[in-house]
Length: 171
Image 1 (tube, one colour):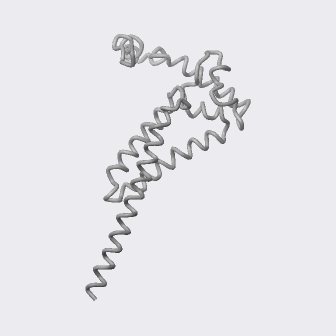
Image 2: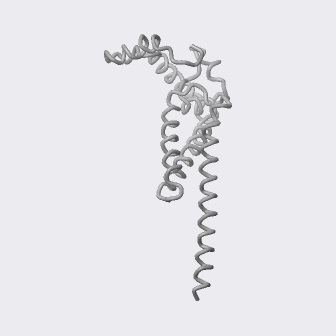
Image 3: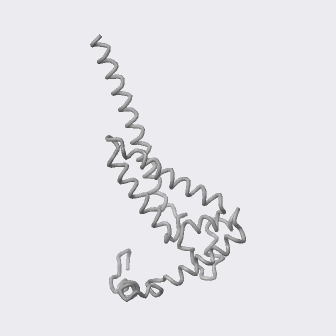
């Protein structure tokens, strides 16, 4: 309903089914599982080059996207597309984790690590990564990480120069 959560729909489709441990009826769970199985069949026929960007919904018997960004990249772009996507995600994750111990960069790194984990989990059920606005959070996180790394390096160089100058004055 105009971008807002419809509480009644959520209660009927998801909450009550989860409450009574009937997950197969929660939301569109069964359809998503079938879409993922269909994607795996498509991947088995075209594992290296895929079927082409944004082509899955045209080939799908459900006329829908796969609802899993990892399977989407692999089925539409081949294994190298999936590897490239995973490389970007793990690079962000590695940069953020590697900077957690730095005092000047600790909070940003913790937030970036949490954001990246949430994003990676979200991609399991994400419907379409190709839309331009979907890439903005990833690009923003990469920018923040590199900007922080640059500023920290600049500050460390400044501190070293200052320390060397101070030691020179003491002699």
